[in-house]
Image (cartoon, rainbow, N blue to C red; front, side):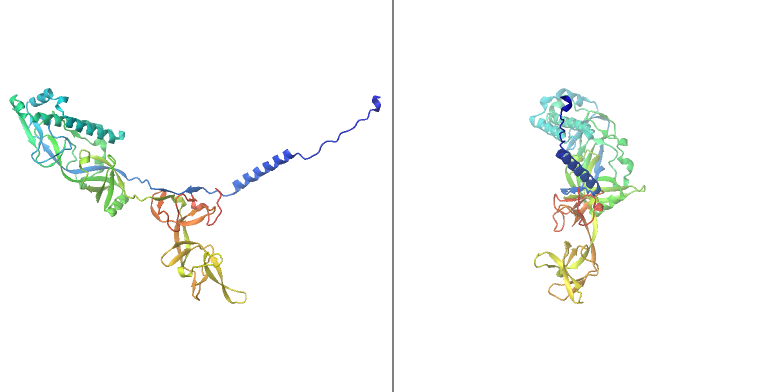
Length: 462
């Protein structure tokens, strides 16, 4: 019957939930790891690589040359026969002056592409390719100089061909009012004037560097000129100079160099310039760099961008924040010995035993630098006033002499290990140091980025 039914109660399974336990363990591990991470001091490292410093040694200079302006003796139309930048000798034909303008008409009617030989066309092609290879969009003004240069080349070539048939021109009466003019001196022909021709170092002012006020008067063939007007100028010497404006510290640095290597940004060529300095009444500092070559490449340029190559040594590049100055004991080399069993270097420090007798302890030390007679030893294991014993002798040396070394903390082994460095040169952010020194750094070493954040032999957590 329903009232006599027996009900059996099943026991619940109270066994351990291993999944929950594993989750709790992992969760606890993560919490501990996070706490440890934020409680530890983390040091940022820096890998040492070869490099050089980028210093701001780029200047805009004013070019000064020995320039002779040749002026017209009478009015007329000028036609040039010498190409710009061409070197002419005394008595070479440079231009003609036509009072009637008949010669220009003859040139127009008798000059076409057929007048230019294969050699002439090759010369034009060379000029164009050279311009394309050297063109810098940031200096667009050179396009106009190139335009005038090509025009001058074409006129010179075509005019030279016409002059080779001078008798034919004479028979047509084209030379009745034409005067041929010849170079009064040897030099490079330039078809422009700008008012800077007679400047010297002592004439320099800051206003002369303002390109907005600069006016260059280009002299063009077949233009009408008046009596006394400039028709061209000659750069008569290979000696020339570039004058830059700089601060007093840089001027003193350049004077100390006496000769400075200069890179011309226009064509990337380099040359050595002799240094001289002038300070005007307004307190401006001007440095003149004098050259005896390369003038031809820049004879048409008044403003020239240059870079001063003051330091070319490559080395290990380290941030200045990593550099630290530390003191060390200086010990004569004869007091450094090696421990027998371990063969490690160290010193014997004099001690007193309990019975009052003298003995010694061998103290392992690290050598951080050396001179001809002395070693620089770590001051972490030794103290001022410690007495060292010379191995195999009764001579002693009392620690009292200290010296400082400049270095960085190497962390290749997981702790801060001081390494001495030899700085070649530096700027505000980085220093270039001598690579592969005995007690120094090597390429690809890791160092502490901020030396003030660690202590010697401290364990490093990155």
